Length: 549
Image (spheres, helix red, strand yellow):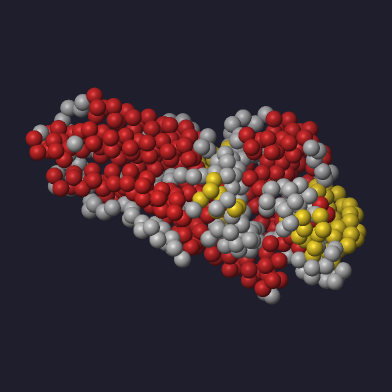
């Protein structure tokens, strides 16, 4: 047996400032879960971590709008996230937050190490100041027109329309979100991460990446070739990680800013997980082991942070693994409009999880994951895909084979006779499909993996339609038994292939078949005489109005 691989699955940290929608689920969280579940089944040592990002202006803006403390916003949405992950089966090894003492300590350690290495320095810079509120304006407190695409509701950190990263001073006709006033430029002192020092080293590393998605690699290389600019990593805020001593001398009311500390969360979460496991050094197997692999699941609007800035932070810190891959997804759109929590486009994960069976929801998103291009989604498409693919192909196959078997063989796997070429061919096809699904998931081509598994189900359906065991049983019981035995072996194999995608019903199917929870990426044999439990449909067909308000 090959030695288990250490696989770090690092998943985007959602801002605890509002509900997460299906764009988030398909962009990062479901792909990461599918990938992690596969590797666990394959026998690898997986550490999947993330948490709620509780710092930064999205939280403080929301808190000021509602007139409540930031912690109240954090507590509300962190709890909502935990409920959503449980409903859709996101199997974290640790889901934490950036508000822990552990995260603050790890962030301050990274800050100090980079400062000691000469990669951080204090500078005075002109920043936007609201003369009516009498305070400096961090990025999301400023809105204006994007200088790249002309979108008139761009934020000071990013344009939601074109996805470009911005600074507040880049905006055309900026306005304060606090008072609507036109901001003024005033000097203030902050710490800067000297990204320019990593220019050549980072570019060489990016060009050496193999197997990365083209849009990710091209975006990262293009951004770096444009010249890395030193970037402020503190803000005039009182909500966030404090600047460690002896560097806390640049003035009151300043904190390490969210874009610097959030990516450190992948490291701090691993450290926290290790502490919780009573082996404080266990995190090193994923971060300091040169053979370990790390995969960062994010949306394309976070590519620069994860494929440019975070690698620079890691290089400057030293001794920690750089990303193996950053399989950033494109956007899921709704009627052509990008889902956005801040703009209220796209209903929440929890809303759908309350109306759909969890595996039906997972399937409807996994089948259209925006791995290479933006993918549009509608409720009608979701219902159609669930009914016409998941229920009609896989659910119906399982139900009819198990029902015919239970009825004709006293709820047990029949003893087979001699296998024909068609029987052996089907089992070979399913075993090959298992290998092809694995190969697709290894490359983070998750849509292709699901499609191959469902093609396998269609192959079994075609085999049954050709062999017609329901008819053959009346004239040749042994042959009918052999066909059903073969179909059951095929279903047993497809259950493994679909487990990363459909964990709830795969477990239920395992219980019906009397199998232990799937372990190992291979088709389990079902011996003749093996008992079959009560047969229940895996899925419920949806009515056309199932997702109406």
